[in-house]
Length: 242
Length: 354
Image: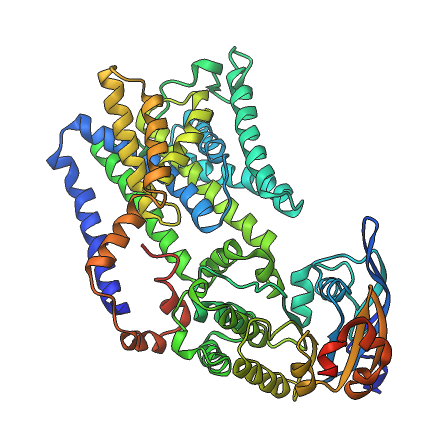
């Protein structure tokens, strides 16, 4: 059965920076087509976890398997070619190039030359930047640059999409649209989302994993997690109460 | 401005350049033409750094290393073969191989940009010292005496390919050198408009993002480094052909610094700018040298300071900005035409065009 091999499995993952333990013995499993939200206060180790998944950091110890294949310690571009795409916390875009070129650079690794044009256009439409396609990315607003990066991740058609704070710097309306996009791509792909905005989490979440001080605090459905007293203590507090 | 208009404008510019190269010998005197030949050879060197620095984002101080290797490779094999045909090829291949080996350790060893500058600078100095200490009869390769600090005089100049007896006249040498400059310029322009060239620029723009999309930045940078080394080597052959002489000062630090000044003055991130900067600076240096009233290094330093402070973008980008201000900006709707074209074509006017 295909279910025996999860899409992503991290076992006893530990990442140390000198004396600081950013990820401490994390074990994490993601099934095919799953949509998972990661939450946790600043410094809980969410972004570090994403960086070890994408080869930007080599874990101190522990194993990561993507569809059964070990990926810990592989280089970023090798992992990307295996099918993991990431939108990083700080927008990582090609600032000096146009929006169209940014998307095209992501598309062309997979699409044939003939299919590239239409693929770029459909992504541009999805991220609603068709009218700005020929603008240089550096001249766009922060929210728009976030979308350029999301667009690049989608355009590369990865099997697993990691989104680190996709709604940061977006207006409420843009956040709604982002949530709609996430639900739409989740029809065909697995996604892990790191987000602070609880309204946003409620819009998209099914299962939530809470990180705290480098460890997994709890992992459950969104309602149960939000009701969990420990989670309220470490992180949510005021926002949920309000 | 539509794409079509740009293409026509570029084709016209190329045509004018070709006519100028062809007509120059019949318009100006021999001395001035020889000087232009030297400037064109140096401009090829400028293009090699303009490419790797302006588009690859790699500041290599080692262009003179490849330039010198190309010059020596040409001189040694031309003396041995008495035919420039294989010698010119060797002047491209040997620096490219050297760049491949050096670049492999730099890029696959993940050495940071600062150390890349240090390493390339050091390699240049090492080569200078090695070649400088090869005086004496025991230092010879085949028939070619290396000559140490005295250099190698009487190097055979270019001949008609495969006809060693038919040595090129100064006019023909100018056509070859000027034509090579135009050819390299067009080659780089073409490369930068192709997908491979866009990936080179993408790696310059954001290495992390490029690798997260599945591009291997180490490989991209290595290939950029090799191509740039090969172009610098070809420039070395053109330079030796101009003077029929090569000496160890071809590896000198002052030349390394001068290339950077050419590009800063002409405009980083363009291909035309470094050519303009090179010819302008070389002309000023030659002029000052003949006057002997001022120290040319002092003037070069002053020029650099003035440009960094007042025209940090360089001549060509500044001129382009001024031109853009004069020509009214196209309405957004005019750009719809671009969308019908493949992205590589539509994109070619973004970062690579000037």
